[in-house]
Length: 136
Figure (cartoon, rainbow, N blue to C red):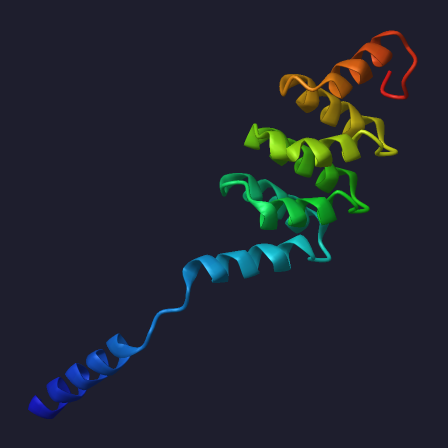
């Protein structure tokens, strides 16, 4: 029985000396893979998950690429995530979403822009009310 205890202790020490992987890097890699998944629900979940991390250039770059997704639900999730940040650095991406061919996406972007006190969002919403925009 003593040999098994020594072996278990040796294994514990050997495993304890290995350096754990960088958790942040691993999480980022998982999000990048999910953002490119074939399943649109997984890509949508990735966009939503990105709202849980602090906004930075890497996150904005990932969301920018996701604004071009062919699935409407993914693009809506990206706009929602950008709105959740409540950060002026998201304005260029939200303005880009105003040009989306799907009315739900550009309307959602206009609402977020309006909430961030951006004049383009207000102008878009006024055009919708006046019946001059496809969002109507």
